[in-house]
Length: 301
Image 1 (cartoon, rainbow, N blue to C red):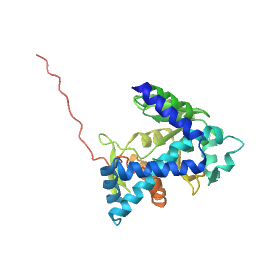
Image 2: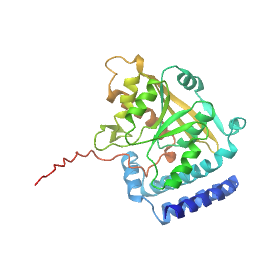
Image 3: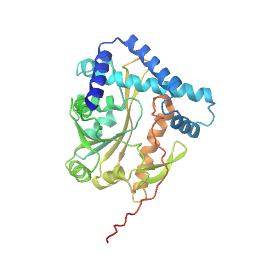
Image 4: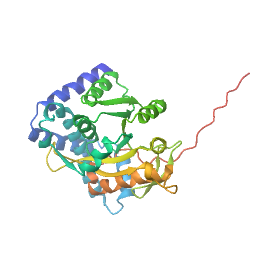
């Protein structure tokens, strides 16, 4: 089954790579309509999230925003398929607009480590691709896909220009070592941790957040950079923006805490999502409720 799915995905990618921008635009609109209006994929989760964050939207507006989100996701897949053959060190200016570049480059050139942080927003894969293309290799924490062939395929794309993938489980010691050596770590900061995370407000709704990102930052005294790659009005046109930089080493005692650092980067992500809400993954289970750990007692007889 894994091989069959891999063949189907690769075949679809080949079709996308051979398609014109106009065809892809129509294809994305069609798939978005099918997924959102006909099959209603993850409709309950999307409506729940939109109702909580944008209570002023009526049902028609929610469906319209959800359809735009699905179209953005399809375009993201198409962009991933075409980026390796279209975006290179000579042509990148045709596709990528850089904003607040000085702050980003200063952080990446610092001898201290950098944590480059984004969210399930825009085309975050292009952000990592571009960083490597510009000569800034990084390490990314990601859960391996269940399909080994697809996992290898997507990791090959990520690694084209020096984006190295670290498995999500059991990676703390390796990340600590990399940061101590001055490496750059890229992470998605809007992932829920309903078991051991901290609770804070995200887009007006209570959410859980991993403690690890803030812990890595505080222990390494790194620069934290929040950056986004937002799709512009045309396909394959991105605004790669350094939203803000936090120099952890300069924090005073009142701000030097897991909660304070976590709140800082969540606020940066919030402001960008509200500017372009249709490029956020509203199907993402960001607002999982806090759960208690279960204790398993071994019974010996």
